[in-house]
Length: 292
Image 1 (cartoon, one colour):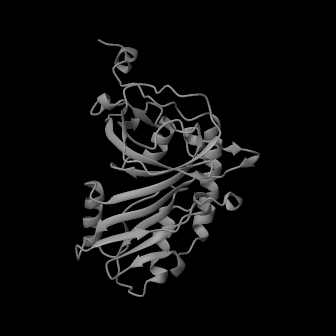
Image 2: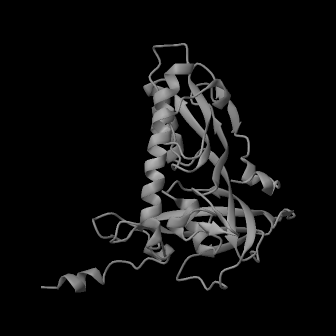
């Protein structure tokens, strides 16, 4: 009979590193602060980006849990018969477009559309690292939990392989475009580099450039953009779990700087195309003085 250690050797090896030890305490504190903030949070009409009789799109603030947004939705909708559901979810510290449906039927249609990747999503992130040698790139890799329970990047060839606990490595693909480097906007580029993740990426050490990127996830894996930014050597500022700068240039940054800026979809009832955009947060503009 094979020993436990021999069986463990059969598991695919994660490509990205585990969270740094400091992240545990910081994440716990952030979670407690977000719980307190969420308990007091109430949606207002100012949060609403789009609304009709079937659904409502809102601009979720940073540091608030999705459940708190859903809980307060009935306070600003007159129709008391609505059955509110989350069509999509955002991480605690990710701000931006979130859709709340008003019936079970509409919720099921939208969840199916998200699952089948029929809804186009774009995010914007502020990263710290070495200035990329690309302007547009697609990263294709595996995604899964390591034996310690953390989400990690895996090689594309490992997709389908079993992981500790019985889950499987799933496919993960994101396209990135550089928006600006150190406040200087970059020209758009049609030439797209493609990386199929095979092993650890050779990265230049550190880097202190401010790199703003726009991300288009083609799959919907947990922490997908955060993981792929880490893999590219430009972790998101404040994202301590994925080696992002927590203290930088004499300042401390609470939470990662990732914003769901746009959703493009066919309306689940009328089939009309709709585009929902959320205003950019201060850190996504070139006015560094308002960044927090």
